[in-house]
Length: 226
Ligand code: ADP
Ligand code: ADP
Image (cartoon, rainbow, N blue to C red; front, top):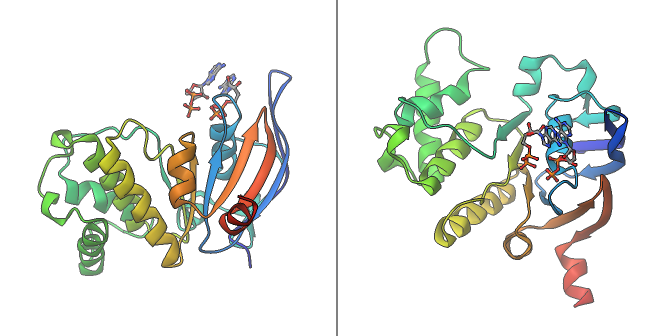
């Protein structure tokens, strides 16, 4: 079974075609980066996959058609790290605990707590557990957002520009983390426009322009060609 299958996904806005019959598959555990200039349709594509926009064509997620999935079912299959995460009054621990929402009844169980501790360690932010999210740097906040998505325990992780506005050290830490997660079996799909960073850490690259796929490469192929 594939993690994700898109067939002829199209989306128009006011008669203007924004996605034009986009088709591709993603294997489980792949680290896919979707690249392309501003306005290429990357965010729109993500919004379709996340069920936030209704598009034509078909999208299968872990073998299930997106149209047949309830919101809570989708929340157990795909977690999402938006481009901008709003910090709030919550401390890091409670912020990450929000990722357990699709599984929790009223209060967190011991398993929920243990899982959050585990996730904080995976991301390397256990020391920040008690800190209010308002007091974090950009790189720390991005790690917290990824930790919240990991607490959701989904097979697929989708990120919109995960390295934007971060210092170079944090950018590399985030990309290393994403690569490790994919090596551990998670399917990671990131929209980016930093080609250098993507090529250094990613595994497969889809280039988009004007709502279409211009190229689809795996690292091995690129190495052979260079
Ligand atoms: P990217 O993420 O690659 O920068 P987007 O998916 O954000 O591209 O946008 C693709 C195209 O769709 C752009 O031309 C953008 O202006 C347009 N677009 C995106 N969202 C809307 C919207 N809500 N209303 C009108 N046009 C939109
Ligand atoms: P991104 O940086 O992720 O590509 P954008 O900056 O293109 O996102 O879009 C930010 C928000 O503005 C989105 O909600 C998008 O739907 C909306 N948007 C983008 N382009 C347009 C547009 N031409 N007209 C109206 N809304 C737009």
